[in-house]
Length: 257
Image (cartoon, rainbow, N blue to C red):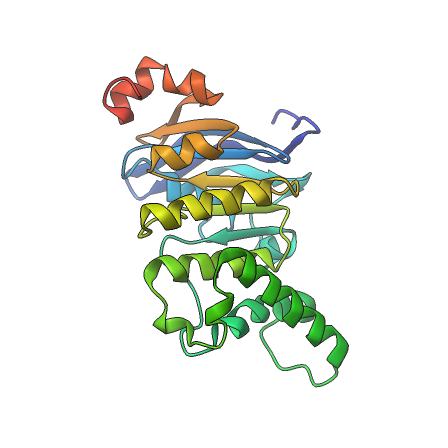
């Protein structure tokens, strides 16, 4: 296995994934540069979500390895990978619908600190107040502060996705994986999310984004990788990928405006 360059925070090295006779991923070599936003695009069924699931330990690769900042993730449980500094926003928001919005954001911070979702009678009031203040600040940033006392289940689909993003941000991950972060959002909410993700970028947080909306991709991505039939067919700077005839044929349907 080739040594990962020092500025690469995540390396999926020669990753394959088969489901029985179905090849979902083949010869994946993906390197994510620290502090950058890396978009992964491709048609439905290309293997994008499967790749993210391999990275976070939800499914094991058939072969190959995923390395995060020098640590091999392959074989680790999802919670162990999360504790190393990787968080993910899913296609279908994973929230606590019966809890208030504010408590949804606070819960992951307690879990990360205490090691599990449990009541810790020994935790200090001061630390709980700090977590609450941080959660309120994040909700303000994403435009949900006014709904902090509402049950999370009452939010629109777009707001639930922003809530899940807030639940990731309070964990202060080094690597944030976003699976269709603007799905179900209006154009106004999409543009608001783009600006929020740009603000996050200024903090130095590394992001990997799966997205079908090319406006989102080309607004945010420093680099783009294109998956088709489980293989990376192109990877490079946005203008290089935009002009690649293989990408236009396999996914974008002609030249990209």
